[in-house]
Length: 322
Image (cartoon, rainbow, N blue to C red; front, side):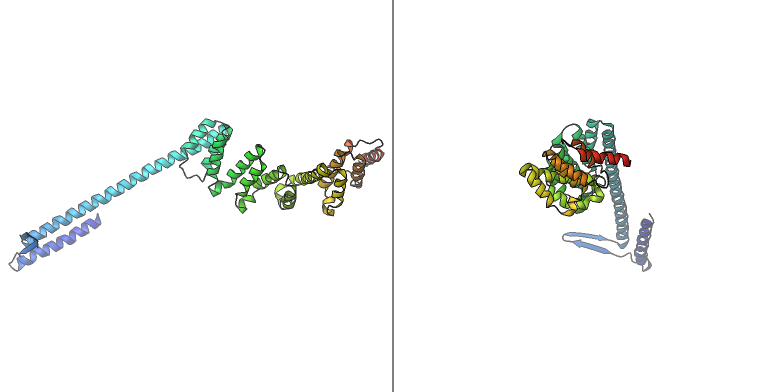
């Protein structure tokens, strides 16, 4: 408003000057404007009035156009904000329905939130609802869409890997996990699933090579997987080459592995499975000279010997020690 008043004051001063100047000299002035065949003749006073009216009209029109533009923009923002609020409401409702176990409502609400900016979490909700409803194809499609978002990629690939493992497809699970970034592959859920997938696909050598790097992440499960690796490798040798090859394979293992309690338990189990109970008794008692070991002690009850005196003697000694 101040700007408009300022412009009007300047225009008024100019007009006063244009009108007053000819009057002061006793001549109202004469103006002729020619544009082709069109000729306009007028006085300076009349021209000044026309210029004044034109300027006022231009200022009024520009002001109206400016206010109309701002009003249109505000209306667009209002409708945009309203649409975003509606999408957010649908997204929150989808999460609530998922927690409540209302799969149909969760799916419907998640579909309404698909155009929102939720970094792929809305697709994860849709996928979980689809899994609960037994719609595998829909779940996989939604999870792959969620995987396009960096913040949701880990959750999406881990879920796809779990689904593959549940269907007995460890190779597919490993492919899903391989698509994660290096940082995401180092996450605990990805590591645990990778270990499981390697074990289920009998890739014992690779699992043994990588297991040491996962000791902190696996925690108490590290010993379990260490034993599983030993059991898998020894079982493979025993099933393909027999008992003699099994003993030879054991003797050629590095000392570190032969002293590993998981490997020892797995080797004793394979000796028992091969019917080599005398050899099993010998190694079990030798490895427990300093006292019973939780992973080895239960194997003594599986011994089938005509004279298990050494094992009985060791048990009596440990009982008395307690």
